Image 1 (cartoon, rainbow, N blue to C red):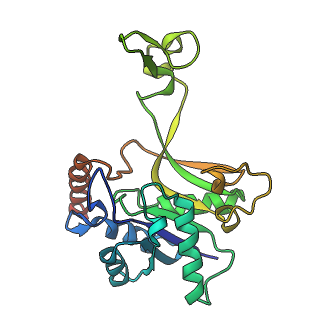
Image 2 (cartoon, rainbow, N blue to C red; image 1 turned 90 degrees about the vertical axis):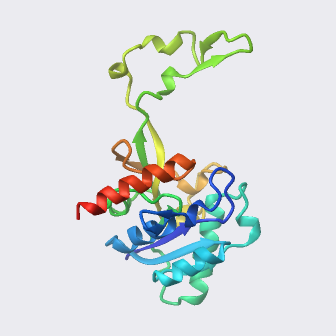
Length: 245
């Protein structure tokens, strides 16, 4: 049973206005994500959830299904899982052939750069392990939580936690491995998305379920557009990547 990919892209953005449709390496940003979903061997259906008519038009031109997102799910306070659930239910109303227990892949429209095999790696682990969800991660590198500190109004430095600054570690090589979600992909079961897993504590991350797994990407392998400089970096990376083909 192949997965249903839900690409989330609302029109509003305070940091980079219009980022989801901004031109990057000759294509609208969201188109790179649609193409990544189309190239995945584990994805059968692609839904673009947006309140932006331009994004919905781009979705249909690219062979995806457009799902008009209600205004209350398109604000900067709206939750990812609420928008994804709405898109899946909206899709099922008009597609009787939609598999009822298909895995769900959540992708962000503002991520034009991700490894070519990332979606398939995540869905493969989801199926192989029988877990509730798989999220992609990147190593934190030098921005490690052990090296996080507090500064008071006078500039005095103290540990973020514990009593010893930097946990007594001053060489990056001695830091224990730590990872942060990179926004590349979330793959999860329908039961997890619709919060049908018993024993899950309520909260904004409840849709990940109980058994949460991760796949790791190399540093810089995923680029999400959160600042104007990200547009320049993504444009350069994608132009170089496709020049080699």
